[in-house]
Image (cartoon, rainbow, N blue to C red; front, side):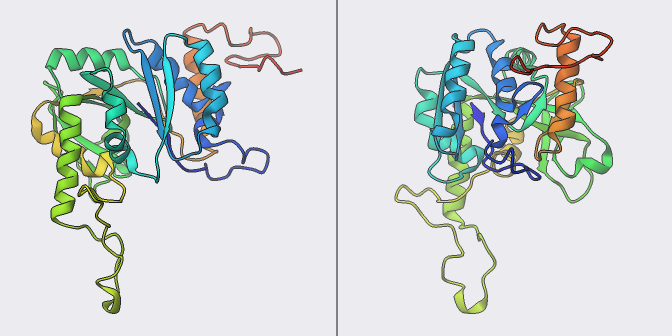
Length: 301
């Protein structure tokens, strides 16, 4: 599953404002395309589900083009009725995800730039008989608290503790936003998180004394679930660490978030360098006027 962010990149100009973040071109292709190419390289993956809050029409052309280029993958987009968070979206569309009885599935946040070592994650998952594998990378100690931090056993790679944006330093191994989950584990974990919220309503804003009983608590739905965001990082991963079958694959390759239009510039350079190293035929032939790596769109004149 690819989780599509539901925000526009900051700094988008008038000429680019019609392009949503996941379709923003980086290294000659939409951000989302790089995720799909990585998924397509993993044997036996036959279906990719895009989940987000954008209208279906936004991704219609992209899905058609990608289906032609990657015919081995069945692609579909599922729109959330409201922004549900990654865990909320997973649970809301669980019946669709579980159709065909998969025993495990990848979850990728579509606003990250990396090499997506999915085959290595799958290998670790199988070797450890894991319930979940998370992709991690090292950053400077001063930057680590801006991300989800992972404390792991260096020998076994087991995740011992996970904290989303901790107040103080606990680890410089951070969450890359790429996961592999066992279906038998992740959905019961999300269901347990929903039940905890039902038993102990969480305040969603700070009330004044005169309206304490009004709309400051998450509304209950008919089936007991909450009509609010359920976040994978804040609400689920910490509990998964208690399972003793949660592992981390630490990547030494490049990784970067794409949160703004400006952050697409270094992401562009990273993807181009990776394509150059793999001798991609898409790149322009070096010459006296072209210093590699360079991508030239076929329509350029």
